[in-house]
Structure formats: C-alpha cells, structure tokens
Image (cartoon, rainbow, N blue to C red; front, side):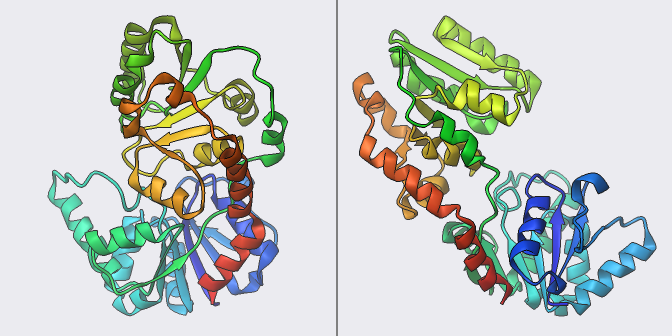
Length: 351
C-alpha cells in the first residue's frame, strides 16, 4: 500500500475519494474515515475504505497495522486526538506523515482552559514538528505552521475538488440588472467569526443609499443570529434582509448569488471559500478581511478588495465595478479549479 488516507467524514470526502479513483491507480490507496458514518453516503465501488471506531478493537488494530504498512500517511485535516496519540506513540511514523491543512485544524482559538486541552495541543505540536510533508492550497498556511509550531516538513501545494456547480452558475452570468438597488451579501453564517457588527459599522454610512443587505444566518448559533438581526434592523431598517431558512444549492444560487452586486466577507480566518469562488466566477465585487484569503486570491491573479478600505470610499467608489477584471476573475477561477490542474498537484503529493 502506497498511500493511506485518514480523512474526516465531510462534504468533500466522497468527491475526493471518487476523484482519486478516477484519476489514479486506486489499488495504491486506502481510506480510513472517522466521524459520523453512513454507508450510503461514503461507500465507493472498488475502493478500500473503512470507518474507524476506537471502541472496536479489531478495527483499532487494523488502523495501527495500516499506519505501519503505508509508504505515506495522508492526514486530511488534523482533528482526531486518537490519531495524534497513535502517531506520538509510534514516532517512526511521523516522517512519512503528510498533513493536508483544512484551516480549522490550524486556525482556532487557543485559549485552552483545562489541562487535557493543553496536553493534546502539546502532543499535536510535537507531531507536526516531525511530519514529512505539509500540503495546503497556498504557502501562507505553511508559513503559519512554521510560526505557530515549527516543523521540518517540506511544503507541497494541493487543493480539493470544488463543490461549486459551474453549469448552474452559468445560468446567472451576464444577467442584465433591471433596478438600481445595490444588493450586498454580508457573511455566510450565524458565526461570530463573520464579525457582522464590525461590517455594519463599515456600511452604516451608506444606509441612506439604495441598498439591500442580504445576511445569511440560517446555520450556526441561533442566539447570535437573533442578536445580529436585531442590530441589523435597528441600523438599516427594511434595507436589512436576514436569511434564516436553509436553502438548497439551487435556491441559494437563484435567490442570493444571482442578485448580489457586492459581497463582504469580514471573517477573521479563512472561511466561506466556496462562496467567494462562486461570487468571483459570477463576476461579483468581493471585499475580504482575512489576510490569507486576500493573499491567496492575489497570488492566483484574482481581484478582490480590502474590507478596511470601505471607510475611505464614497458610495460610487464602493459600487464601481472593473468589468474587464471581473471577466478575468471568471476565467481564472475556472482555471484554478480545473480537474487537470488538481490531478497535477495531487500526483506530486502522491509521489
């Protein structure tokens, strides 16, 4: 066995397994899934794949055996405490570990308030220091690892298949705007890392203009959502439109993405990547806060704007659209997410 994948059950998991099967010699790959399990959602024909359950001794020893037999251990998201402990107890495995950074496994609140949390953070840092390879969509993440943990690992670039349905989005390209209202998409969830209140402060000076602030709050912290709705209505009145119902991908594209003129993603870490890429594909103007996201898109020749500059913009400047660059954004997003490019990147990771 060449590559042993340890991966959290997530929206990206099955598409990734299918991507590997379709583009590489699947006999050289084996997958261990942890987290919630559903055979209907995860089983892929002709793929060696199993669900790890630490309460099943047989499966637990199978995991230990596979870790030792693999030429490379590819850890998709370093979230599992059990995996970290197993690696620390078998230090000879660390140099053949390849950590694919997901974001939440690197950027999280490190205000540990108990001994157990601090202990596992120490173990995590110790394991990362001796990993062989670190994979991420941009070297920015790798540099963050160097700063936070220190590591001997080499860097390789890699990315996942995008869940974006480009055929669906193509239906909303080049739609002629029939009204003068500027529709502003603010954030993507009821999570305080969206920093809605700070974004409200940026936008408040435009509240007398013909605007409509669309604020998705359908998933996340319900109490936080209520708070944001109260502040949003108090500040912008009927120009604030909270979205509290869960929408399908088609509904989200049809009711929100298709009518948005400007998007503001004021997150303090790399979130809403799929939404941002979809908006750039649709040639929308996007303002970002997070330094990684701004650097990532700039490095891929995609034009995005700095949220902090809104304070110095007039409403006309805020709304001004560089159509030529927006069209280029559409092309560059298509190139960035092409299967051909992804195959080339992962071939390098697997070698």
